[in-house]
Each structure stands twice: as C-alpha cells, then as structure tokens.
Image (cartoon, rainbow, N blue to C red):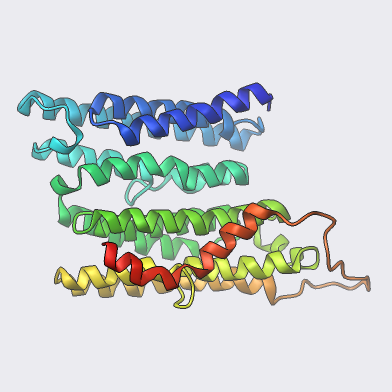
Length: 346
C-alpha cells in the first residue's frame, strides 16, 4: 500500500474516532462514524484478493445500513423532542432504532453475520483495528445514551451474543474467525452491564482491547493464521508462544490474569442489581469460550506436529525483542492487583 495512502487512512481513522467520542450532537457523531467506515475500507481491501474485496463490500453495506439507522433514530428524536443532544434520546422508537444500529455496528447477535467473514478476509493488523479501534465510537455512543436504552432488549442480545460467540467458536480452525466469535462473546458481556454501570463497560472494553491487541500482534509476528500452523510456530519463537498462551487464558477470564477482573466486576454488579439468573447464565456461557481458548493455548504450546524427518529445532528467531508486544503482554496478564483501586474509583 502506498505510504501516503496509508498515512491518510490512519489519520482519517484517528479523526473519525476523535470526532465521534468528543461530540454531543448527533450529526457530528454520525459524521465521525462515516469517516471511520470510509477510512477502514482501503485497509480491508488492500491485498486485492477476492476474499478481501468481498469483506470490504460486506463491511461497507452493513456499516452504511447501521449509519442510516443512527441518522433515522436521531432525526425521529429531534422531530418529537427538538433535541439533537446525544444524552437527550427519549423517544421510544428512537431508542429502539439506535440499539439496533449500534448492535449492527458492533456485531451483536442477531446482527453478527458480517463480522467473522470480514475478519477472515482481512489481514491480522486490519482485523485488530476492526476488533478494537472500530468498536470504540459505537461503544461511546452507547455509553452516552445508556440511561435511555431498553434493559430487557440489551440483556437478551447480550446473553444471545455470549451464547453464539461461545458455540460458533468451538468448531473453527481459522484463528481470525475464532477471535471474531470471541469478540462477539465479549461484546455480550459489555452490553449486559451498560445500562447499570456504563463505566464498567468502558473498563471491560479497554481491557478486552489490550488482551486482543496482544494476541493479534503475537500472531502477526509469528505469521500464524490457522490452527495447523500455530503448532509449528513454537519452534521459532517459544517465548512468544508461551506469552500467547497466557494472553489467551487472560482473554478467557482465568482468575490470576487481567481478563478475570472485568468478568468478576460485571457478575458482582449484576448480582447487586438482582439479576442473579442473568449473571449465572452468562457466567456459564463463558465456559464455552474457555474451551476454545484452551484449545488454542494447547495447540500453541503443548502439541507437537507430526514429523517424520529429524532436524534441529530452531529455538530463537533472528529479531530484536518487540517492545510494544512486551509491554501490552505484561499489562494483559498482570493488571489484576489493580482491582481494589478500580473498585474504589467506581
């Protein structure tokens, strides 16, 4: 890709995200979402592979439909109340349309079909952007209008997302699709709590982005795309693969690691809101995700590929240590001791 084109798309992504998260007016928020959508499309289709072109077209169509619904929702609200402020969404139809639009943008069930296909057609770095940066503006809009959303609808979509993300991830062999269903499952955790504690949703999103960035950057370094190739990558980078295993277990939410913190706080908050059944169901559904994270961790560090020839194992790779990976990997595993500080601030 041309360096100037890459610079323009990167700056446009930054600009679109900044406009949306800092705006109070619906039209400005919509403009930021549109800039973001148009900026990411060249990054998805840059390989010119038919799969990448298909992914770019699917992404554009879904995001265009979602943006239209956002505009429609805000216009109906302004027509009935005279308010264009993000926090003044009070009309019931507008609230319903906005929830649908943001669910389409994020990939929540039942509007999830595009997300695994788009991620599968993208490169690992673009897939990382789609899983983290591109979800930040819609999450911000949900955060600002959280007090007027329908709790029952969001809870239903959240539990369905956690269930589908877990079930569909079980039989996948492509790592990008597994991480796409993992993203759908985590979005379920974020959306179930947004009405009751919006700050907790943002905390969950930040920690999820941190852990997902670690996994994607490690996979990008080892050039791993599917389960059959993850088994042989440990001979080149044993330390990176051990780190990948811990990052995956953190993403699964195992207790000594960072990923346990948001799930623990969400279950705690749901119990305080007398939603014990929802908390129990979503906690049980996270076991499905744990299964495929464990499978990935098992493939990356424990299994040996079937090999009939004797050859020397390469125990190092001729590269300098990647400092960003080292920093975010440490954060994605060791932030749990900060939980008392977070509990005090929340």
